Image (cartoon, rainbow, N blue to C red; front, side):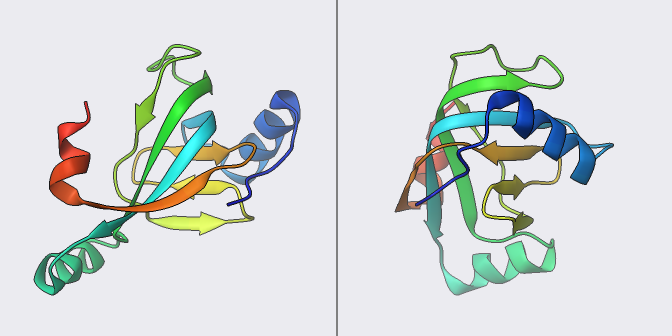
Length: 115
């Protein structure tokens, strides 16, 4: 999958412009994970306004609130919206997908074990 080839500075400016009040996190070496769920659980996600997708990134470039150190990894909560080919929005954070990533599937229970 393709993320954006923006410089870190351009990515910060763009996310601040499009999501001025939301915390953000620039990430590289990311994995888009389609969750394998029973239909009933998938319906619950949808009722909460979330999609059955999570993000795992091997490299945090910058976290606007300092929650994650540069160079560390991060796992997101479920996807709420995806836009412009790089903005992976969750309830609490906008992740900016920089560079190329991969797309995989995993059970929710597997994702929860990653902490």
